[in-house]
Length: 274
View: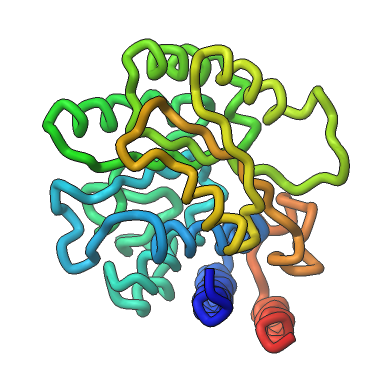
């Protein structure tokens, strides 16, 4: 990837992160840390990898995105606004009674949302049938299922993963995000999940979900015709978050004060100019 394009994507991601802070701050409610950490990854998907057109959000041949973690909702909302699915002003009504952008996305009401946001290991049970139906219709569309590593250890997930392999649902790509750790441990969920999925016949890839060059290299390994279902384990680094929010989900579930929002924006501004 050329350095100019990397700089462009980094600028987009920086603007997305600022809007995440603003929307959570204005709402005085919502999650903050995880959305900031996955912003680079979602920017890459929506600007470089997925086939989509905001002006035609229901076109049949589009790629689909299934979000399997409520923690990522503010990031997805900010991404969709930036991509042109709806006006940026919608972000400032986040979580308000009657507003389009609620705590969990409504796929029947919100442009760019392809399915309900489900968790607890059931994400793949939503994504896999969708991918299978697209394939049966003769479409080359892919389904990207985004979840956290903890969901990969659920038996419901493994049951559906085994079915995907047996049915050769090859147009599904699971992206399992986890916080970067130094060193390795065989007890980490992604290690156990990787071994089990590999045994089923899934294609296993790993990448740095905070580095655009790494993402381009890994997504470049995807078989354009598809040969088997794929899972990509993506590490996300705290350098994309905020110093006062990192490592503590409980603090970011509470209302973000105006002072904290201003402090967050100043910190993000410093990172984008650094």
